[in-house]
Structures are given as C-alpha cells and as structure tokens.
Image 1 (cartoon, rainbow, N blue to C red):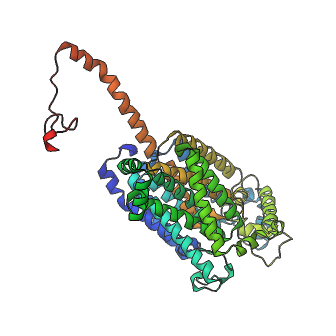
Image 2: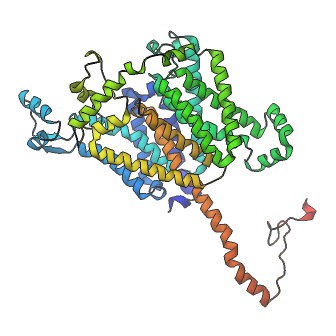
Image 3: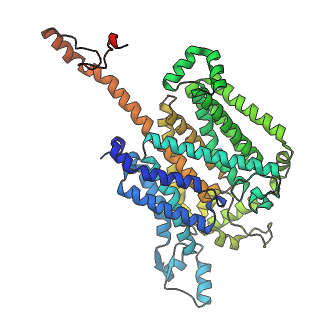
Length: 516
C-alpha cells in the first residue's frame, strides 16, 4: 500500500512506533545527553526495535525521494566499507596508514588483514551510534500528521524542561545539587547535559518551532476559533486571554515557551549559542514574513526578544558578558582545527575511519596545547567528518546539503498557517542552526542532539502538508472537469433537485429549516 495513502488500520499498527520514538525523545538527554555507555546502549536497543518496525512497514520508502534514500544508504555504507578487510600489504600502502602498519609489525602483532579504518572498533562503535538517529528519522517520516504534531510537542516540552532546569542551575550557583556532580561547569546552565554548548544546541533547535507556533496562534488562523476571534477584535482577545480560553491560552503558553528557550540559551553562556540564537530569531522573522507579513512577523519576534532581554537583564547578565570578554584568539579550538585539517590531509582521500578522531589526533597534537590535554573532538563537526571519512563523506555532505535546499523550495511554496506546516518551517530552521553550530562545537556527536537533529529533519521532510495541498488542488479542478457532461445532461432532460433535508437524499448540500 502506498505510504501516502495508508489507511487508518495501517497507521494504528504504527502507533507503538510513535510511542517508542516519543520515549527516545524524552529519555535521550537525561544521562549527559546519552553520551555515556549505558545510556547510549539503551538508545541503540530502542533503535533496533524501531528499525525492525520500519522494515516490517517501510512507509518511508514511499515518502522519501530516491536521492535522499540513496544518501541514507551511503551514510550507513561508509562505516561498513571502512570495516571491510584488506590484505595487510595493501592496507599498509593507504595514505596515513603506513605508521600504524609499521607499529603493528614491530610489535609482532601484524595481522593478515587491515581495514580502511585505523581503529576498527571505534568505527564499529560509530556505526552503532548511528542507529538511534537513523531509526527516529525513518519512523517519524512514516507517521501520520497527528502523531508527528504530538511528537513535536513532546520535543518542545523536553527543551523547555531543560531550559527551566538550566535557569534553576544558574540561579542556585556552581555548587548546586541540580548540577548532578558537574560543578566544573561554573555558573553556566547545562540542564542534564555535561556541557553548556550541548544544552544550547538543543534549545537552538527548539526555538524556531516555538516562534513559528506562537506566530500561527497569535495570527488566529486556527479554523473556527480564529474566525470568532477576528470578529470579536482586540476586546475579544483580551477577554480570552484573561479567561484562559482557546487560542489566547495557547498564545500565552507559546510565548512562555519562547521566552524560556531564549533565556536558557543566554544563561548557558555559550558564545556561539547566543550568537546563533540571535541569528535564529532574525531568520525566523524573515521566514515568518512569508505567511504573516513583514509587519506582524517583526512585531511579534521583536516583542518576544525584548521581553526575553528584559528578563535576562533582571536576572543578571554580568557572567554572560564575562564570557564575551575572553580573547577568542586564545581559544584552543583554532589549533585543534589546524591539527584536524593536517590529519585530514595525511589520510586523504579515504579518511582515518569514522569515530577514530580521538585516537588519530594524538599524532597531530597541537604544540600550543599541553600534552596532558585530552582532545576528544575537533569542535568542528565538518572538519572532523572530513578527516574521518575523506572524499566519500565530503560527497555525502554536499549531496545532503543540496537535498536540504531543494526541500526548502517545496516548503516555501506552501503558504498556509496550519500547525504541521509551521512546525516544518521551524524544524527546517532548527536543522540549519544546529549545522551552523557545528562549525564551533560537536553537538551532532552527542547522541541526544543527534536524535533531535534527525527528528527535526524527519518533520521537515514529512510530506503531509504538501500532499494535502495537491489533493485540494485536484478536488478544485474536478468540478470543472465534469461540468460539461452535467450541462449536456441538463439540456437533454429536466433535473429535479434532490431533497436536502437532514436524513434525506442529498443530505449535506443544505439544511432542514425545521431542524434548526
């Protein structure tokens, strides 16, 4: 059965997958962003369950374009090929692998086979870590619109919880029990993550969705409730807000969500996070102009931002400004980036193997950083992928970038204010922001944020709104197509209008005046 037209029975059979995906969204950040062995193992086991369901009912095959399916297959194929055995003599001649082969031979441990990966067990771990985001993406793309909207609300709720916890940590000080033993984070908000940048990454992904939902609700285009509000004008809106009714109640909730996310980003004290938060606000305003007009979008986003800044000032911005007072040129990220690019050149064109960065970078340890410092990541996702995957990963990144831009063209062409479409707009911006964050951090190496990235990508590529628009256009064209046969029949013989009272033939075309 075509995935776009799956009947209710088929979607009900996918209900358990929606529950498992929701469980993963809630659980993922609770133990240091799942960047710990047992937490990651739990996510991987849940991912295997989801993948089994996705294979049994492969709705994603019908809903995703062929280029995107090929890109996903290539994403899995790269680490698998890096684990393929090669004769020792051939493997030793690969760029960058010679030193490893010599060391093994001198240690008397030279195997008969080598792999493209310099440290195969790390590449195997990277392959396993790929399963949770891949499973979430494939399953969410195949869900119906209602379940996707509910999962988006779960994601936003998780982000708000993390933001509020971060604000509590900031207020309680560096020795607060709310930090769960991570006093080294200082005054920064970290939520249940181990790093302020990773909390900021989650909140950045959620912020555009919150702003999009707030705009949709304020603009009061939610079916019949919106019409009543427009007829009532400003006085109706004020009364509804005081009474906590319908749209105005949701408006207050979404406004609080956006402010909580903004404050969480600010008090995480990540310089890149704060800068990208401002970029996200501006981009959200620009994109929302498409549906709501320039005046409305700028006023709404400006009001939320102004209120957020006012609250931040009231809480205290001195520690935040202190972060920006630090000399950016003294940041260890820059020598690490230079070392990463040097390693990428040494292993060109095949790369060192996915997940091997911590082991390989030791041979290129920057002199500016003390030898006692352990470098776990490049603080630049793209440079790290380039080093580990070489040309195949570069081709994959460019392919996915092109697919992402083409998807924006399709989303941009749809102009409506329905919740799922606004969620897709916000998800597309969230994907962009976390990718930009990848230039200075390694959010996508954190399992929880990788799952959230995949979830937003699934929402962005979900075809629901596009397909409904296509069906509406077909339905609007259908009366014109049958108009001529009907007219010919009318000329041939008189037509008696059908009964239009409730319960009679033709019911639904009119109403029984006696039943009103």
